[in-house]
Amino acid sequence: MTESLPPLDLAALPDPVDVADNTRALDAVQAVIDAGPYTDTWESLRGYTPPEWYADAKLGIFIHWGVYSVPAFNNEWYSRNMYREGTAEFEHHVATYGDHREFGYKDFIPSFTMDRFDPDEWAELFRRAGAQFVVPVAEHHDGFAMYDTQRSRWSAARMGPERDVFGDLSAATDRAWMVRGASSHRAEHWFFMNGGAKFDSDVLAAQTLDFYGPAQREETAPSERFLEDWLLRTVEIIDRYRPQVLWFDWWIEHPAFKPYVAKLAAYYYNRAAAWGREVVINYKWDAFAEGSAVYDIERGTMGGIRPAVWQNDTSVSKTAWSWVQNHQYKSANDLIVELADVVSKNGILLLNIGPKPDGTIPAAEQELLLAMGDWLSANGEAIYGTRPWVISGEGPTQVAVGSFVDSESRSFTASDFRFTSRAHVTGDYVYAIPLAEPENDELRIRAFGRGAGLLTRPIKEVTILGESGPVVWEQTPGELIVRTSRAAVVKLFLEPEAIPPRTDFLHQ
Image (tube, rainbow, N blue to C red; front, side):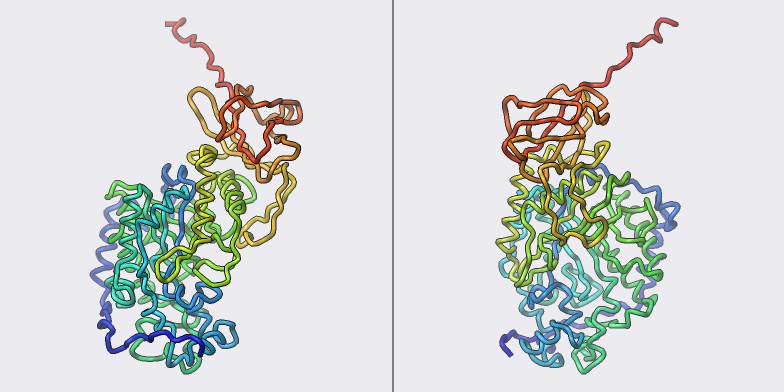
C-alpha cells in the first residue's frame, strides 16, 4: 500500500434508521397529489409550462461532490468500479489501500472532511461566473447523502463532517440571489455496488448492508420497496430544501419507475404551487412524457432550434464530473462556445464543477468560471433573457449532435456564428456571437445580408457589445461586414414594425 487513510470506526456508527413502514409517508404524498392542481397522469402533467425565470437564466452551476472526491481516481464512479475485478480502479484500490474487506468505499468517509468549505465563497464565485441557479448533487449513485436525511444514517450530516452541507450551500445560494436546485442520482443505487457481492468484500458485511445495499443485479427491475424509498427520499429533499430545479440522472427511465416518476412530478408541482414558486424538473431520454418536464442532454447539443426550452448538462472537464488528479479540462473558449451554441438553440447550460474533499474548488476550475464571468460581463446581453432567432447559426464547422459529444475536437472558423434575439417595444435586437477570431479585422455575417431574406426589417443601428463609439459596418446583398479586430458580439437594432393607422373610428 502507498497511502494510509483512517478507516471508518464501525463501533462509533450512528444507529441504523428504521424506515420499514412507509405507509403513513406514502399516504401523505398521495394527499398532496389528490389536492391538485396536478394529478399523477401524463395527461395532467403535460399541462406544465417551464417558468420564464428559467428560460431567461441560461447558465446554472452543477456540483459533483461526495465521498468519491477522496480517492479522486478516474471519475465519480469509483465506488462502482473499485469492486469490479479487472478495472483500473480495482487494481488501484488494492495497490493503494489494500484488501477490499479491510478497506472498502465506506472507509473513505472519515477523510471527507470539508474542513475548508465556505458556502458563501462558493456562492460568490458562482455569481461572478454569471450563474443564475445552482444544482448540487444531493445524493450520487454511491448512496451517501449530502443532505440531512431522516431515511439513512449514511449522510454528511451524521458522518464525516457531520454537517448539513446541502442546507448550508442552499442558504448561501439564496443570500447570493441565485435559485437553489438539487440533483438526485439515487435510482442507480439499486445496482451500483453489486460488483462487491461477487467476491469477499465489505459490500457483504452485515454492519454496512444499509449503505452498500441493495447491490442487486442491473438486469433486475427494482423492487417496490426500493421504488417507494426513492420516492420518499426525493420528497424529503423537496420538502426540506424547496429546490426550484430538480435534476434526475438516467436510470429513472427504467419502466418500473414510471408510476413513481409521475407521482413525484405531481407532488413536486403541487407543492410548488402551494409555495407560490415556479419549478423545473430535468430528465433524460424518455423518463418523462414530452411536455411534462424539461428535457436534458448530457454533454451534448441539438441540431437546431428546439421549440421547447431544454438543457445541456456538461462539465468543465472532458474526463470526469468529480475532482480527480488527471483532469483534461476544457478551455474557457470551449465553454463560451458551448454556452452560445446551446442558448442559440433555445437551451440552458448547466455547467459542472468538482470540489476537493476539503471543500475547496480547484484553482483551474475557478479560473474557468471567472473567465466565463468576464465574457458574460461584456456580452451577457446576447445570452440572458434572449430567445432563438429564425436560425441558430451559420458557418462551415459541423457540430456533432446528441449526447456525449463534447469531448470531440472542434476547430471553428471566422465564418462560424451563433444567433440570439430579444424583443423590444421600440424594435427588435438580433445578436451574432462569433465562435472564432475574425480574419482581416472583419466579421462577415451572411445571414444579415440583404439577399438572405432573414432580416424582415431594415437595420437601424449596429453596435458591438462591450464597446462604445461608432461601428464601421456595411450591408451588402451577400453579408453584413463589421470592422473589428476581435471576436466581438455584434448587435443589430432593427427598425420597429410599422403599425397600420387605425380606421375603425371612421365607422363609429
